[in-house]
Length: 113
Image 1 (cartoon, rainbow, N blue to C red):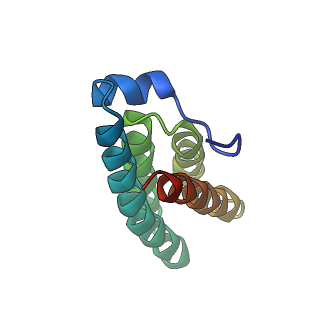
Image 2 (cartoon, one colour):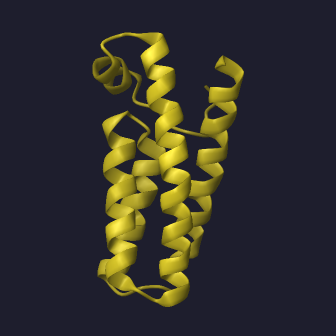
């Protein structure tokens, strides 16, 4: 993996029980899922729906952390905090970075399949 996205390999190995094929499956499912939730998150920002922003960010944070994608989890936590603090002015930057990191993850997955 490149250094543009942080992965807690120990967490991923633990969740997958050290099964490389299952790890790839988990990462693929996460990437597909997070892509949808980022789209929903972007729409919630357009709608200025703070509750929805918080829910989407919380979901992304938990799903990403569960399989060790710490960079996306940290960005989602930042978005969740901004929504809680009603700070929509700076909210697009971490969302955009999540999408970029998701692209890195998708590239990694593509090189392994």
